[in-house]
Image: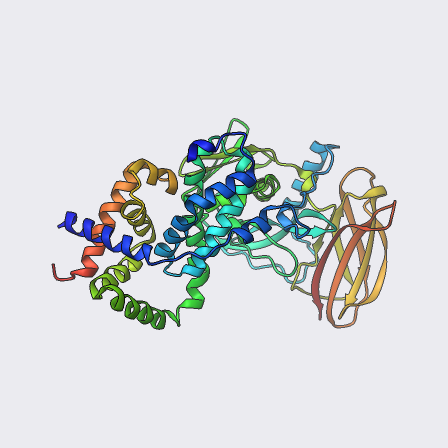
Length: 171
Length: 308
């Protein structure tokens, strides 16, 4: 469907089309990073608005999806920073709710893994989510996060190691 | 072991992601992207005054920034080897125009003056109606690593930079570069085009600095929040029509004194000053300029201080 997005496509059309194809995935990406669907929807909405403003200057319309993903990852980062102070005293409560919900849905292990994922360093979490959920290649992850492919490898293996350490502290 | 965790993570993330049911925001996105009356401030044109006297203006901008603190200032800030005072530039809106204003900000000192200046810009949080694109949109994640001058361009390298959101509009990205160029002036010695890089890769093209983006009226002293003695001497620089500057001193919003002064030379930026006798209390000095055609406000600056 990307092939429809040519240089002649207007910003409005591009946004409509990309929204139809990628809105759900971008909200899910944001939710995996932020653990808060409403905040993720706000971030994804900002990403589309930003894309609209930049459309005329995107050299390759095909890079629009990478641009949207990058905006969502960056937006989640900013949202997290803004939320850190406000959240500190609520996090315990929220954590309990999330894990209770998750264990009803799919058992304790899933809740454990998601909780561990939320506590590893941000960059490692971003790489793991992009790789394991979106199935992006190292090159695509590097483009989204604007880091080198070598860094993608490093963050990925460190992220998995950090995750394992939290899940199996005795292993 | 890694392979197992790999697969497990994949399964868990998928099922978790699929449990998320996004709600529809297309209407909201349309409303924000189609030109409506609710224009956001960063879409408004950042004024870039005509190219008159560019060189002269930049010399005076430099003089404004590099000027020694007023020797009459009874409370000069204590110099400290652990901190560095940087003149950073924030933005203020007058009418539909956005101007740059200098503000003094103290940051930690390293041996790299230019890096300190950029860090100060990202740390500074304006108050009142003033704003900074570096604080509001770009600074989260703007981790400055190096500043280099080469080939007549100053290159600022960030380790990470949430720059996508602040490069949305040409005016926005222009304003962020102007803030940088002027903030870096004492370190670079002259206004240079600004190039950002993120982890070494260029982010956009070099943007030329324009001294015309500086507010036509700037009050230098007394600074916000300072304690001064009466009579109070208010000084600043201006570049206004026929060099006229109007001023007021307000207490609790009421004008207690007002007058006219002039920055001397027409067509270029020059210093102005006025002196007022004030009983103890907190006051706001306002210097401004109005349009000769229709009397509307075209430039202003305010500073709030306390008379002991």
